[in-house]
Each structure stands twice: as structure tokens, then as C-alpha cells.
Length: 373
Ligand SMILES: Cc1cc2nc3c(=O)[nH]c(=O)nc-3n(C[C@H](O)[C@H](O)[C@H](O)COP(=O)(O)OP(=O)(O)OC[C@H]3O[C@@H](n4cnc5c(N)ncnc54)[C@H](O)[C@@H]3O)c2cc1C
Image 1 (spheres, rainbow, N blue to C red):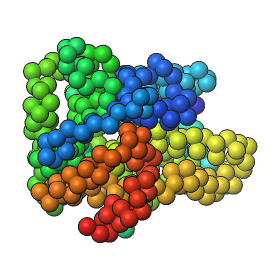
Image 2 (tube, protein in one colour):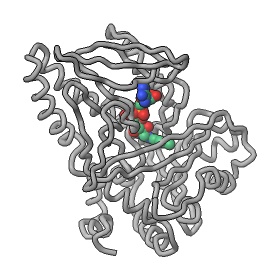
Image 3 (cartoon, rainbow, N blue to C red):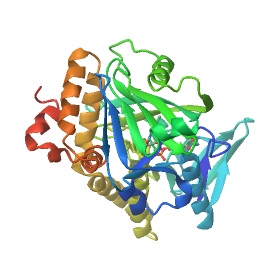
């Protein structure tokens, strides 16, 4: 097994805010070394510029150190006897007549190598570098862009944001998206903005939104240790190609990233586990049988794993964020936040991470889905 990444160091471009619910952290058996900080409170600034917060007496989740998470995953590959090859960009994969695969890579010096293998897994995230990206009119790609800075703050500033996930919402603050402040580790905050792309409108630049966010949060004069950003792209119905012969894609490359909360680490890991189980079961099967079995089972099991709620929340995410662009949508959002005031911090986690919309009453569903206003 060889894990190849175009990054020269796994701590480069650590773009993800990496917030995760505690239950998933435990379920996925992630180690303590990847934890940045813990949170037990949600804090939302609504369009009316009013902060609301929901606290739990116990820990609800974690903010991971994304670079450490990547490193730990690569270490796992090595511990299992695999190799890690950094600084090589995958260019393409071809099927050879004998049924095996050949994948070509280029490094920063322009050198080329080819690696032969039985299977190739495209885990290149939203770029879908090997599996490709056909146009699917019935299920178009919904795309978001995000920008995040790592700030070094004083103890007083740290206390203001520690232990909580803070989101800033409203068309004035981030039209068609949201801003956030997450605690990374004592003295370090992650602050960022993300919005969906809307080709029908002219949208403000992410840097102007980030600047506004820094002002709103009183963090404008603070030292910036790192600037990173990324793209999140998913199809709501996940009709992406999952495999082509012995080339199989997982994670963001098959749209497991969820648009509602802009998160996908746990779903990407889940897709890897589903795929690993399918491949392990097929070890030793004849080539054509194995390909057919993966084709049928992988997509089916992954759909079952993500569940119907995943699709519903993607639809809700697209509607919520794309629609958040004027006073009318701000008023609707304020109304929702007022409804949420009666909920607990656990209810909010259940809504945003477990997509438990029915907790807010079945009558609310048509509104959530945009079928009624
Ligand atoms: C700004 C932002 C904030 C986010 N915040 C959260 C959050 O708080 N919580 C959460 O759960 N999720 C969050 N996400 C989403 C989450 O990070 C992704 O869903 C998750 O990382 C997907 O994992 P993946 O392994 O599929 O892809 P990635 O993590 O994108 O990994 C793909 C890897 O492939 C490599 N690669 C790409 N192309 C090539 C190539 N041609 N050759 C070789 N290597 C290549 C890349 O260098 C990268 O290391 C956020 C995303 C963004 C953009």
C-alpha cells in the first residue's frame, strides 16, 4: 500500500477548521494527539447583531488540529506496513490489459514516476483529480469557498472564545455563507468565512468579508500565524462516479462533504471504512468478479451509511446558504434563531451534526426544505 500526496509536508495548507462532535471522535477511534481543543457551547450572532448561546455541562465536541490528524493518518499507513510518498501530484491512472493499474505522478522538479498497483483509490478530495468530474445536469455540483486565519491572541481574548463554536450569520456579515471563530488551543483561534458560489450574483471577496469579521469580533489587531483556505464541493444527491474499473474514489471526491455545516472529515473517514470492508471481503476474488462486486456494494453501503438525512441536510444547506442574501432571508433566519432559543445545546448538535430536523417538530420540515415559507 502506498499513500501519495502532492503536499511536501502534511502540515502545509491545513485548510480545515476540523470541528467534530465528540460521539464521532470516539466512534472513529481518533487519538488524543489530534485534539486542538474541546467545546461544550454553541454561540450564534444573528442578523440582528444579537449573540445567543447554548451551553452544555459536558463536552459536545472537539476542534482538531487538522495537520496532526493528517500526520496521524499517514503514521497509521506506515505502521500497517505501507509507504508514504510526499510531494508527488497524481496526473492520471490507466488500466493495463493484464487488469492492473498504472498511475503517473510528477514532483515539484518536474520529475515523473509511475506506480503499478492492483487498485487505485482517489482520495484527492473535492479536486477529484483521478476519477474526474462529469457534468450531471440533474445533480449539479454545489460549491463553496472558505478562508481561515490562525490568530495568536491574549489570554483575555482567548477566554472570550474558548470552549465554544461561534458562528456569525446574516446577509450583512457573510451573504450566502457564514463566519466562524473556533478555539484551536490556548492562545490560538481559527477565524474564517465560507460562502457558496452563486454564478447569478456578484459576490463580495472573501478577504473583504474576513476583514469585516475581524472588526466585528474585535480581533483586527491580532497577529496572524497562518492563512489558509479551501473549497468544499458536493452534489446533493451524490451521483458522482464512485469507480471506474479498479479506480475507486472516496471522501469529498464522492461528495461526502456536507453543505449544511460545511463539514466532512467524519464522512470521508466513514467512506474509507466502507470501502476498506468491501475490498477486504473480496480479497482473492477473480478480477472481474471483484470489480463488479465493488461497483454494486460500495455505493450502496456508503449510501446506507450516510443515510437519508445526509441528502436532506445537503438540500437544506444549499437552500439556507444560497438564500441568505437579503433582509427578507435575515428576518426568516432571526425567526428560526428565536425558535432555537428554547432548545438545548445538545439539540443544536443533533440538528447540525446528526441532521435531526424532526426534533424541531414535523411541521417545521416543509419550511426547512423550502417547500413552504
Ligand atoms: C474552509 C474549510 C473549513 C472546513 N471545516 C470543517 C470542519 O470544521 N469540520 C469538518 O469535518 N470538515 C470541515 N471541512 C471539510 C473537510 O475538511 C473535508 O470534508 C475533508 O477534509 C475531506 O477529506 P478528504 O480526505 O476527502 O479530502 P482532503 O482532506 O481534501 O484531502 C485530499 C488530499 O489529496 C491531496 N491531493 C489533491 N490532489 C492531489 C493530486 N492530484 N495528487 C496527489 N495528492 C492530491 C491533497 O493535498 C489533500 O491532502 C472544511 C473545509 C473547508 C474548505
